[in-house]
Length: 222
Image 1 (tube, rainbow, N blue to C red):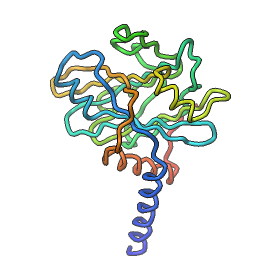
Image 2 (tube, helix red, strand yellow):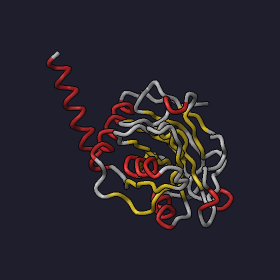
Image 3 (cartoon, rainbow, N blue to C red):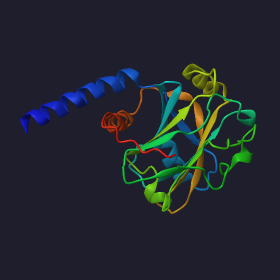
């Protein structure tokens, strides 16, 4: 038992150091639909996404709901530039910090709620949207949870290109959230200024996903 605890502690320490060294930039979200001021503020306070170079021409987008207020990120939308000409190619897999929750490629509606409010308008790219399986709020990213989305890069693009396109606004990310205390829903769009430093809860979620990857607990679809 003692050796098991020692090994677990050592593994956790290694993962903590790895996460703190290799963690990529973290971005917050700003409200788009603004159906409720209170719900919009909850989302802006609790929702974020971290980027990580996964190697082999792939990028992890880890969506976090830091809590504590009731809310659930249920859908993700990527606007990959005009006619999908940006750096991302597709969605290759998911890793939810709650193994009982499931996500699938594709979202309904196909575009982010409030898309026409942006200039230029938000146009979700086919193949680069995701949704929690029903029941959505239950399977979504709830307080204290995170979801990693693995995306291969389009030919000739690099992780640096992804960051550059986010900073320039040519690659945009939108999310839809439900399960707020008042029962409403809201949509949000990525800000282009990273959070510094990363929230502590995001670091813990990153470590948690690292443990899942280390144990090869990965759910993928054909």
